[in-house]
Length: 223
Image (cartoon, rainbow, N blue to C red; front, side, top):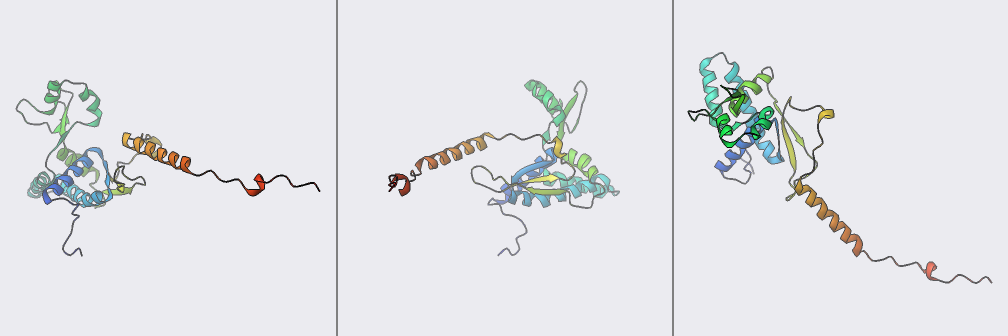
């Protein structure tokens, strides 16, 4: 029975489960969608929608006290993680280690938050909470709920055959004609090769069909 159990256990301890939920939510706010097992996606969905509601309150609430309380609650639940905006990732990968450090944090040691260029820098790192409050909250300002959708995938995960699904923020989907075809991963290629080898072995091991009696018998007499 599931009496008084309002969440998914996920076979983990409380601290591990909270860290997993937080990391999945951070990745979702960074990329717009994530792919994981159906159980994990269902477990993080309610947490994500709660964070978006808090972000809207932190951005648009007229009461300054409630705004501050919502921001503190977001930092407590989501923690912080810095990322490089996708449009600047190519330039970031071409930098040296010292230049990357400068892009990520100021001379005082404090991490950049907004992603905007400072001084001679054309861009800087950006915090997940800043993107949540300034981008996602503004997108869903006039929406009362239902910020996410779950899309089940037909292909199962290689290794344990786990059922997978996509958790996607509403409004981030691409036009079908513009979606590039995703190539197969190395694990998927190896699994397909193993499956083909097994099928080939089964075909070779099949016994040769015996010829029918009519084929082996001599031609009938003409008399």
